[in-house]
Amino acid sequence: MASIIDFQDICKNFKVPLRAKGKFSTLKNFFFRKHKTIKALKHVSFQVEEGDIVGYIGPNGAGKSTTIKIMSGILNPTTGSCTIDGFVPWQDRKKFVRSIGVVFGQRSQLWWDVPVMDSFELLRDIYKIPQQEFENTLNLLNEALGLEELLNRPLRQLSLGQKMKCELAGSLLHRPKILFLDEPTIGLDAVTKLAVRDFIKFINKQWHTTIILTTHDMSDIEALTNQIILIGKGQILYKGSFDEIKNKYSSTKIISIEFAQEYDEISLDGYQTISHERKFATIKNLPDKEFHIKDFVNQISKKYEVIDFQVDMISVDEILAQLYKEYGLVER
Amino acid sequence: MRPYLSIFKMNFKGELQYRGKAISGVMTQVFWGFLNIYLYIACLQNTSVDGFSISQMASYIWLGQAFFAIRFIMMGKKIGKNIENGNICYHFVRPLNIYSQWFCQTFGEKLSSVLLRFPPIIILGLLLPAGLGLSLPVSVPAFLLFLIGLILGLCMSVTISMFAVYLTFKTLSKRGSSSIVNTITGLFSGMVIPLPLMPQAIQNVVNYLPFRFITDLPFRIYIGNVGITEGAIFLAIGFAWLIVLIIIGKLLIRSALKKTVIQGG
Image 1 (cartoon, helix red, strand yellow):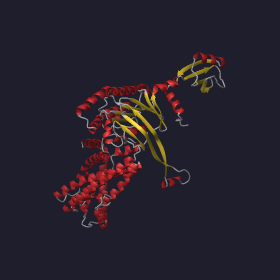
Image 2 (cartoon, helix red, strand yellow):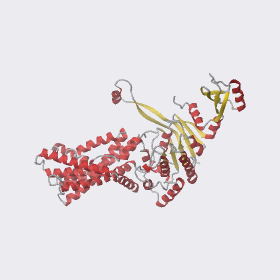
Image 3 (cartoon, rainbow over the protein chains, first blue to last red):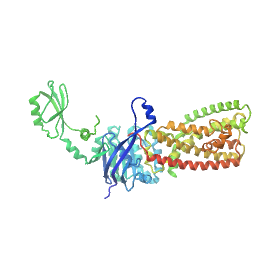
Image 4 (cartoon, rainbow over the protein chains, first blue to last red):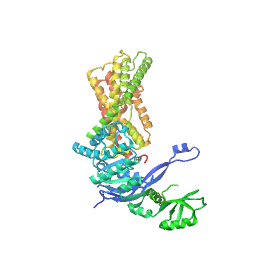
């Protein structure tokens, strides 16, 4: 089966003006401007199968949004080819965009000063959705998201969470085959976040919609999908199962210790100190050393006087932070 | 057509909500109207320039104030804002032609701001005594031609606004872009100095530029300064300009889109 999204060797360069520094720099900048090329994407390739949910993750500035924008036909790539649902997004833009829905978590597609329903009706006209189909879709979205009371209020009166629900509904009115979600849970409270996640799952099941999701919230990924693409500095670093990455790192334990007295240095065989301040310290086991509670207690009680300690699993966020570090993606 | 019509309606309705803005606009226009008229009365000293009499001049100025919203070049306010903050990316994921989409948006906003502002000023102008106020149109055919001219003016104004959108795309500053286009339009459309008062040599050029079709031509047909036949010929020239400018605008926007960079995030 052919993939619904086929991204081949895509590069995207941006030209940005360089600013000269020093005396008369403003004047110099005015007359002579040098440009620097920034490589936002470097030979990015991946495939997505129909009906999948794929998490697209990476630190800020990694190229996530650029990828989404190329996939949705907003930006032209510098080189490379890409077919989505049989179209080249930036060539057949008008035809192509009928099969996609897009939500940019930090932007709004609905009209700010009119009731949400008016925006929906405008979208109905834009996509030429037959009235009957529009009503059916809206009913379904209504039920799934609980929009009923929101529809007659202007967007500007809605809370962030309510707004996001409406944005999601708005992007799905024309029943797109593919849905791009760029940070859909940004700034949402816990309850709304859960509702949004449930809804994404529901849509995926109900309509077999292919969903590409970027997020910084790893719990989104955990709740929604096992397939991730990790991107950093414009390159794909990892493609595949999220569990695999988790397993690789889950052997790491974080141990917080409270000592009876202050020590100058904490050194234990096979452990690394993360932080140490007065009577408190946090350490973790080195990757090649498996954590055994008995061994740990033996070691530490021989050398130090311990009041209390607590062992934690490494969190998903920490796994990601480690991954970023490993690939040299953390700015220092 | 349906999608574009709906976009037009949405923006038309949206702008109608801002009544306070319209009221303050009307007050400003009335003030400027009086200021201008007294200024020109003082300058012209009850004489006429090339058959442009004081009462014709007063009518010309009142029409200009009443239909100021046509002359004032403003791109759809959401377009400028969205280009600056990057929300514009949603305009690209709709199955619509970008130029037509923005054209309808601007047209909707413009039409409603015209409709909200002109009636009170026209009524006031008609109530004022002759020589200071607005006279009735010279003839029924002239009035009909004036109406066609207004429609052309409205379309021309929106078309020229699209060049401001293009400049905004290039410079990312909606204020600067609008100001440049506005200054040029203001000068050549007769809103700073009525065109009949300009030196003949300049008039010979300006009369054939697209800007004068925004307001100058319909007003001069209304006051009888431009005759019916001459007016009809000029209207035809105006419509030709309109088509040319729309095509150029479309090409420019298309080339700009190829180099699009979306701001932020």
